[in-house]
Length: 620
Image (cartoon, rainbow, N blue to C red):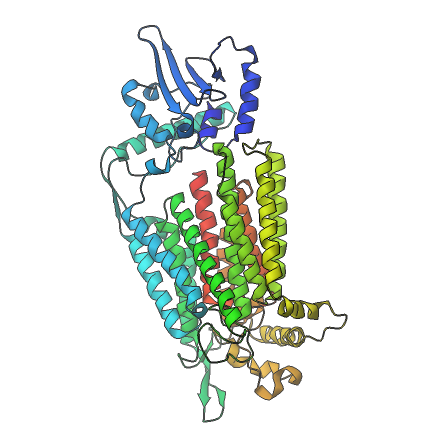
C-alpha cells in the first residue's frame, strides 16, 4: 500500500512502478488488463494498461464493492491520502464505501480546476509580496530614500495581511498532509497512529468552519526574534554615536564626540545623505517580508505563483535593458538624459554588478521552474512539458547577464548553469525513470535552441564584452578596477581590525573609510574617489555591525542551513538547485557588494525562506 501512497504523493517515478508491477505480476492468475500488486482483503491495482486504479474489498455478505479512480486523478494528488497499516489493509473506519467514494475522489483529484482555491487573504498576501519584489528592481534597485520608504510600507502591509485570522469554510482547510511510513514494523505502527490522529483532527476541522491565526506560528519563527534583536541592536548603535558629520560649503568631516565605550557605536549623519536609520529601514523591510512569507504562505501553489511572477518581471526588465542599451550608451540610465559618471548601467540598475547579481538570481528561478515542471511531467507521464519555455527564459537572462558587463556575475552564472546541468543529468541517470517523450523531441528542441541562440549571438555586438573580459586574460593585470580592489581589501582589513568589536554603525562604512583608504594615494587620489562600499560584503557587514550584530546574522543563517539539512534538501532537486543559486550570490559577495543593494538583499532572503517553506510543505 505504501507504494500506491508514494506514487500518489509523487515520491516514486512511473518507470520504477512499472518494473515492480511487472515483477509482481509474473505469477498472477487474473487475466485482467490491470495487474495486481498486493493481495489480501484490499486489492490495489496499478494502471499498467488500463488507465484506472481500483480499490476493492471482498465481503461474503455484500459481495464486492469497488471504488475506481482515474489514473490522472490518483497519480498526483497534493492533498491528504487515506492511511494504511503495515500489511496493506485499510483501517476499519476508512474502508472504501459507495457513499464515501466522492469524498475520496476529491482527495485523489489532481486536476488544477479541482484543487482547493487559495484563501482570499492568502491571495492578498501573495499580491503584496509579488508587488514588493517586482517594485524593487524597477525603483532603481531601491537605492534612494523614496523607494526604501515605499519598500517598508509594502512589507508592513504584507505582514499585517498575513496576521489577519483566516476563516475556512467546511472542506477548504488544507490541513497537514499525512506522513509516510517505512518498512520497519515499529516505524509503521508509529506512522499509523500519527495518521489516525491527524485524520481525526482533519475530519473535525472539515466538519465546520474553522478560524486559523498566524500569530502563534510567527512567535515560533526564530528569524522573527533574531531580526527583532538585530533592529534593537542597531537602535542601540544609533543612540551611542562616536562621530558627528559636519560640513561647510566645500567639504565635510567627522568630529569625535564622547560615547559609552562598552556599547555599540555609530556615526551621526544626515538621513537624506544616508545614515544608520536608512540602513535600518532596509533591514526592517527584509525582516518583515521574511516573516510575511513564512506565516502567510500555506500552499505550495502560492510559492509557484510568486516564482512565476518574478521570472515574468525579470524577462520584462531584461528586454528593457536590451532596448535601452541599443538606444543609449551604457552611462545613461533608462530615459534619463543625464550621464551617470564612472558607472555602467543596465535597465533600471545604476550599477552593473547589482544588475548582474539580480539577473543571476532570476536565472536561477528559471532553472528551478524548468526542473520542477519537467520532473512533474515525468511523474504524470505527460507527453509534453512546459519546461522548455523556462529553459529559453534562462537563456534570455543569461544573455542579459553578459551585456550588463558584469564579469564576475557572468562567470559565476555560467559556472552555476554548468553545475546545474551536470546535477540534473546525473539525477536523471540515477533515477531509473523512463521518459514518455519520443527521443526525437528533445533532439529537435535542443536543435531549435542552438539555432535561436546562434542567430541571436550573430546579431549582437560583443566588442564591449570582449574588451571587458580580455583585461582579465593579460599576463600582467592593468585593469584599474582590479588593482583598486586589491588596495581596498588591505584598507578594509585594517578597518575591521580596529572596529570588529563595536562596529562603526549600520551604514557608517562610507563615512569613516576615507581615513583608511587615504593610506593608498594611488587609489584615494586626493579624495576624488569616494568609496561607498567595501567591494566585499563579508568584510563590510562586520565592520558596520561589529561582533554582536554579525553573530545574530550568523545565527539566523545557521538556523536556515540546519533546517535545509534536517529536511533533506538534496532529495528535492528543484530546492537543491535554488540553494546552489543562493550560494553563487554569497560567492559574488566576496569580491563585490551585491547584498548592499536592497533589491538583491530582499529577494535573496525571501528565496532562502521559500526553500525552507517548500521543504516544510513537501515533507509535512
